[in-house]
Length: 156
Image (cartoon, rainbow, N blue to C red; front, top):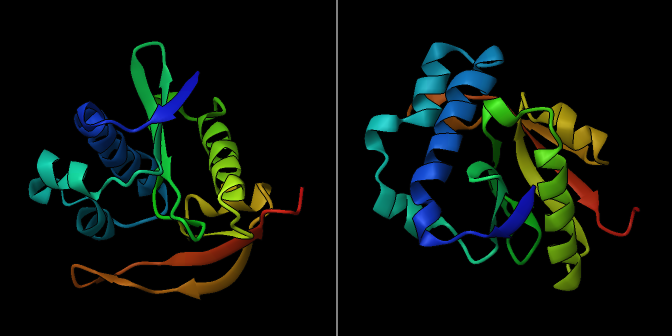
């Protein structure tokens, strides 16, 4: 397993990871209508996807495959963390989170935060995040459920 910075040529692989994670893994907790509103595969294009990736986006590879990706903003916000279903339960997300934490800590950030899906909430809780609020954002006219979660970086 290797963690490296996202590069433009990762666009197709990371978009595929996102789409399969949402449509397969998250479908256990969200309705078909919610999954369609969240994934929107017909609206995705590689140029826009690539432009949305920030300097602190990281990719995990296993062999030649992109197994997952995540990001962290300068203020510690994790916008995306997705693992390809075929690489689930292999430590990919844990490795990414440890890397994000190190990146944020090196930048002097005191806290990590995220808006975790129902699917991701247990993972983040296992890694010391606590729920601050349950949220009901509207995505493409469809109500979703997620959780605002935070974790102090200095909490070991």
